[in-house]
Length: 303
Length: 205
Image 1: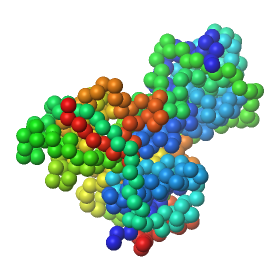
Image 2: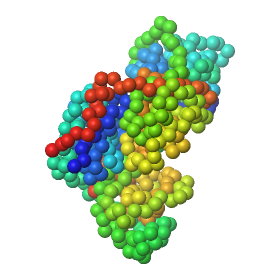
Image 3: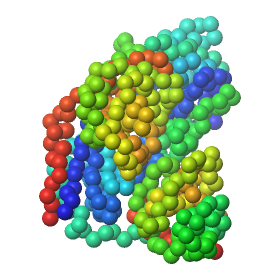
């Protein structure tokens, strides 16, 4: 049970602040999106810094920064995009465990060179889990609502000893996304696929936790057949009828009816979380590795 | 005879293609991969089953491509009966498309036993298979901004019950009459009343 006297008060959530953990994977067959921290390495690092298990819930702060107050003395850490961290007029270190006294203010400034920061508090945000996760899912509405001024987030009991890390690195936004073709690359004009490789796209302002919406060279289909809905994965690059690709992020729908031309390499997804509207990113088609080749046996006789 | 195609999806997923009537059998077999952690998510859809969170793509692909879904008996899921008030705003339009009266349209919808083929669109939104091709209806050209929970709807050859309030472009035939029925309850196990494989009957009343 969380101690009711230990809470993190939201003074100003800025543009968007949500509670995030590692999400609710494993329920996609019921139509439940996976959700969870978009910049997962930053989320895990923030937790390690304050002595939490990596799956404890943190606050994901978007673009403009946010302001908080802690009710009790506690240890906090900020990771993800670099930002100024202050308590009142006192500057605090980014990427380092910092101990605050009871009643202290805590302000994260606007994200620099990125979009999303993670704030971890020792003990973790202890809102009631929904289906095993405390993550806010902006697509389905599962989990706590986006944070509002005045919200008091309960905190769990501190788990362990804060673990400072030498030179924690700010997250970088992706410059290049490696895309493995498939499963529906054969729905596209080969010339359009070839053109996709090395093309630059700009990130549009309607991008969000559901997907990164890109604008650039149109990826033309071979024809206008309709694809029956099929399961989607994190990082899937879906191409709707207008030919402008969407890279699905953590709050993506579990199924979709537009063909997926390829999937972004898992290692490039945290960098997607840090892309801002207006940023430019280059798509690079990569050939599947050995496992991928083995996984494409084509039509098999059976029976 | 069509073959079972396995397509790679990124670094850790596979998409298994099959005939619509084989999805249930492939889904049932693929769920065995969850038990020993060879896959984290198995997601059925209209003509595919997605295996996600697969550590050893090569081995699982080889195993799955050897499956013969036509040899396995289709699994028989639990039966859920839902009482429906056939008073939806699109019932008359659907009756016109089906060239019958509203009463006859309600009867035709209720006389079929459906099976939830897959969930999607929203948590607990089950796509129920069972309407014959000749009763396919187009989606609304302009989706409604809000469909109430419990609305019973059709689109294409699918029927579904909206588990929670949401926007929606399906044609509304009626409403689940029993207010105690929870189509989606995150505290229940499982949280969705209509899971893949569940058989569904609608009872007018």
